[in-house]
Length: 312
Image 1 (spheres, rainbow, N blue to C red):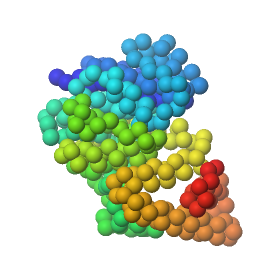
Image 2: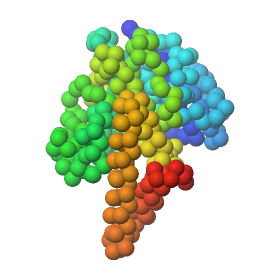
Image 3: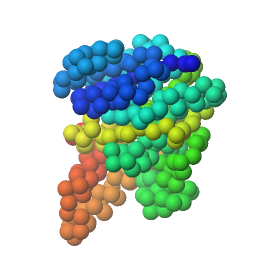
């Protein structure tokens, strides 16, 4: 039976990290090779909590916030198990979660990457499967066609809102909040691209798995809860700009200068239109809420960065 090296990257998420580690301790102990926590210079007591409450964990303390990809790569260098699980710190494993994914990989040698069904804290489904970005599905996202016609696969965009999350399926993208893969596959595909600070590193890795001939499978019999967005909630404007930077890097890497220019143009149109529409509705007092106001600020921050290069 193959055992699993679990890698968790954490940044100022002490309470979530505690819950994550406790769920792994309770549900996956017999299948574990090791647990590695990479702490991105947290100042909320996360490293001390791990040392005091989870002595079995290998703790790597970074001197700065390395981001998701670089920190996971540090963990990958230390991991020695034949299977590797990359799990976000704000994820809780359900019973048999790791066991099901491990067994699936053992029975399907052509599969390089698997992921579970992801639920939010209220038990609602999170969209964790997707298509690789293309010109068409990016247009659908830019003009909100994926929301207007979300039941139509043609217009659904890369989030695949029509997808059946109750059946196993080969997919192009699995959300980076929870992956299980093979050490042998990583040796072929390579580590995460450390140029991605956060966001789009999962698109990039999944594309490289595909390009190397490995299948990517969604396994709904395995479940986990993902709280999501906790590390970025304190700086939403900065986060929105980092998403743009990551997208531009992805399109440059896989589609060259023309791809980067295409995404830049669509992103400018997207944020410009949304800023105009939201401004109009706010002036008409139809969406005068805190959430609407925050969205307006995010679109303006992104538009300003795209046009001038000025950060928040």
